[in-house]
Length: 353
Image 1 (cartoon, rainbow, N blue to C red):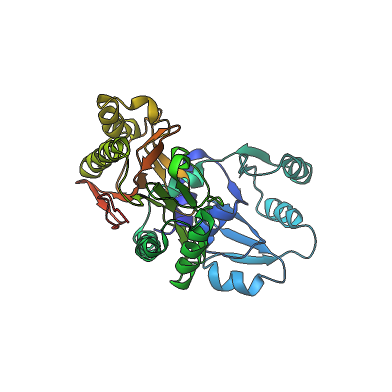
Image 2: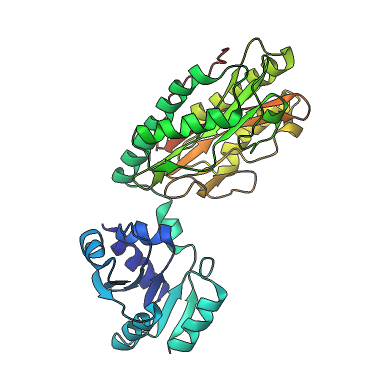
């Protein structure tokens, strides 16, 4: 079943005549359109893609099954025409994405009911199909190759920014179109910062260096973290590394369909807490990835939704101690009926450079 057909089934179930899709990520999901200007109106029976003269040919090629409409004036005027021509009485819109002013303009233009519909497409996106999984696996392969490459450049006297730039560029050389997010390289006491984006700090002997990075490949992301040591680490750093690794491996071994996000989070959290470091694990154990670096489903103490086959999540427990340093280890997992498939393969045992 096509993605448009799946959305149309939801529209019928929700008794919604049509949905207006404006989010860049949702638009790509339903139409495969990779341009920067356009929107879609999907009714229970038809699909329209509206864009200007710059992208009509691209839309005709990428948005298979859509009727391509060229807007020569304001793009929302074309939405008004579709609503009127198809006699739509209700139109869903992405209330969490659209600007308030745009919603006001839409209210003035269309005569049908506007229904908040954020989350409908995002929920469909949670379950990846075979083509999406293949792309995400390739993004993970590039990240793994990037990690193997960058190990040779991590040494005393090199700055975090230098490491990040070399890593980012190498992933592009391997086919990535960009990075999933600003690459995190956090060394020494900065490794206690979970999101310590690369700084001018120079690597020093004895530092733990946390590398959290990923890339975009064909529209989909990878996300992995490894922590390495430059020279022999302090005993407590080695201790927390072993605890984080044990917690992370437990999730890799146990996460499967039918578990809630909270249950997955608890596998790691309960172990770290039992070792006396629960207060130093302050973030959730993971999140979904796909077209965006953070999407549902999540694995946290608030995540009561049940995981299903096709979900792709991160597994990234960590311990962070101010003034000492921190450790995070992260893999990407595909949830299956029997368990999960780990799709990041870089070594997790402590690497001492």
